[in-house]
Image (cartoon, rainbow over all chains, first blue to last red; front, side, top):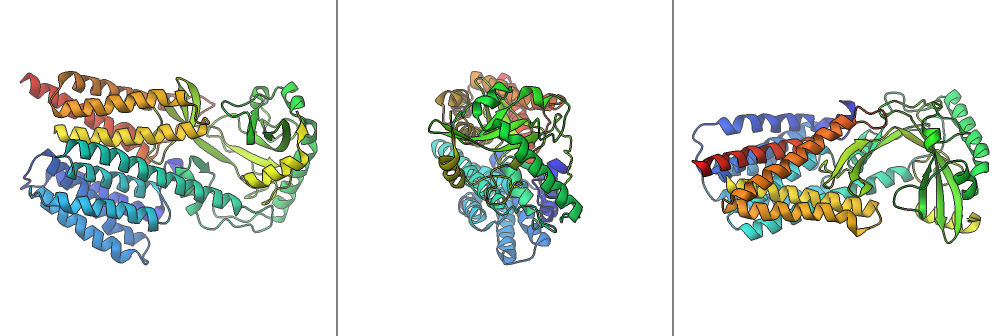
Length: 370
Length: 117
């Protein structure tokens, strides 16, 4: 349940519950007129009105008035659709795209409640246009695709921005509020919550520094890519070149040893121009859903990925903000993992990622010929 | 009811296209990763158009396609039993992967029944 809720902003829970209540009640209201499209529109508009009405309860701020105004607008349209008055189509055709665009521009943290509401509003837009089949089909498909793409890009930007802000081991390191989980959840990354104690103690900091030093020391034997391949590391599916090629050792993944600097489950190389540079290692838990040990407290922080596993052809992707995967693939969550960088990048050894430009510069200077 | 199914299928087609783009980006744009999703999207939209006209074959094909979506979701849940992977349900995933296919199947079932009547 914690993982399920990791993509839902706690302050949006009331809005979600209000929306679900509207979904349960509106279809059974009396005096419903109009056809199926009108009744569907009334229910979905009611959901949206309830969500917008209750959003300010979670966080009063500059968007309170627009939320309330849009809630009343959606409520009036829901009533119109319920009574079978066709004018709701024009209103919904204007209000739905307007609120989705406003959400994409000013909505702030993208969470599951916001994405679901946007998807519902785009469905209402489709219903409003449903008397014009071709226009409805094109507009709905494109609106869903483009809105999802923008949400995805925003989520990844937030994720990488959080990466860049990840500091090296320090006592009292603080990640800010838990909103970082929201964007990352939509970007296919499930962060282990930091809990109440977000700062590392001096003992934890020492342990984190020791682990990083041991990993740097042990990593020297894999500086040559050929040595890593000889030790059993394998290329990943897809990319064999780039600034973050993750080489996996199937034997080390099932050896029962956790957080062993001598036997990291993955090595991360920059491979380009006939040269390879070992950037860092990835420790991976053997079982999915199992929490990794954190000797460095909040510094040694694990994360998991929500991926799409394709069967035909074999491949991987990332679960979309709409929670879906391509045809003939299924969503899975892989075991927790933690990076330790051995090249001292910006952000230190426990940064969640390495800036690609920085990695390229380092690789050109220190790369070992293949 | 037919137009509601049409809209729901258009929404589904949009979500599949987005997932296809995500996989293409991850797999370095290799075009054969687009084959299955594109076939599915085209089939979905063609069926959506034909359902509006009351085409029986399109209704049955749509039921089969939605059944595949539900089977994929079930497979994902089953895969979560394996030690190497876990199943992480999300709010939007449940709506697009379970609720939407079930609603479309139910509506298509009604459409088939009405055709017979």
